Length: 263
Image 1: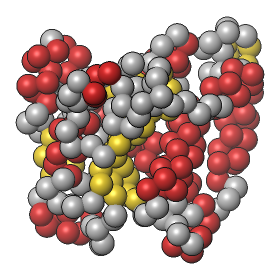
Image 2: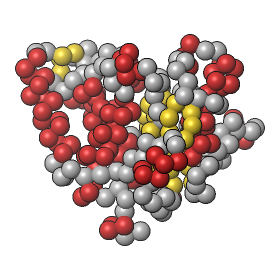
Image 3: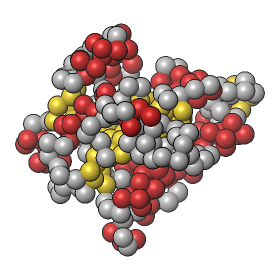
């Protein structure tokens, strides 16, 4: 694939200086509001809410061997984990990727972002996702389009913002990535309030494709592959439900990418 045909070409974004400018603005803002403590080591920091050393560690995504289907960390030389070898629940995926394990201080970082609404973390998360998308594109050798998992209809009214939509803003405006909002959620029940069996049963009918007219306007051309993005994978049932819908409109591959994964 040539550089001119690469769908994730950095030149298509809002200038090469977009990401550095965001960081500079954050630093100036943190100086104005006063001291901030790092969410991980509690040291005073400039970059909200991580100190320089913790941020550097967090942004360093070391290569880990993961299951090619569900994304769990592998402990053997086989490409599939024990769960998937015994029969995976993820039937509609062609691959799954995760950036971080949902454990230790990664939990604290996610809490600061989602619950404490430290939105200054968003461009860092977006950069991690963008870099992984470039890797995925190299692996599969074709152009891709990102599809965010849609939120509950009341989520924005309750919390004031949608985390994945903010990530998509940076992906689109900062790096020119093709983001397709072609899914919608029809259930307003919070999945975390349900038991595992109830959750899986509820999710199966919670996501649908948007109306055909709306999709035709969004899909100027069908990408070779879709990449679903979300913040956390727990059982994988949410992503599986969304992938099942995407398979209805494409014969291409469907992948998933999350910031964190519960192994």
